[in-house]
Image (tube, rainbow, N blue to C red; front, side):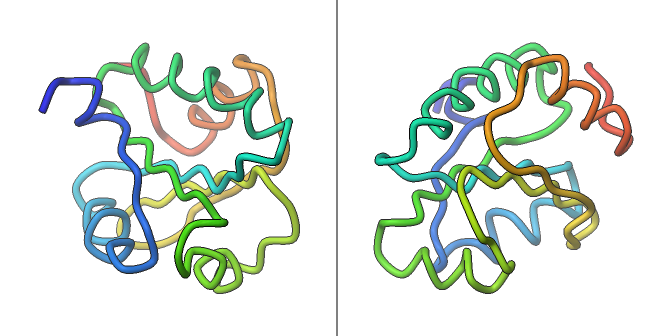
Length: 119
């Protein structure tokens, strides 16, 4: 597994507890709920990927494709009304969220407001 694969990974309802909730007890995990048919989702993806690489291990980025398998149930569990929705998990709990495509400076500010600093 290379560094890029370690920082960014796909997850699903079956693996969410271990890959996101449990992992967030060690390191913050940003979760991107997205769909192929969603233009704002495709706009946000490269921004999130750029930021996770710039922060060099300060947090992980988990991606949940809502149209795959039972992942829509996961979106429902967290009360999502639209996509993309991005949740930040720390210490096993959701700390914050934002909706829709945002510019890079917004994502960096969001992380800073919730105690995630660039490495």
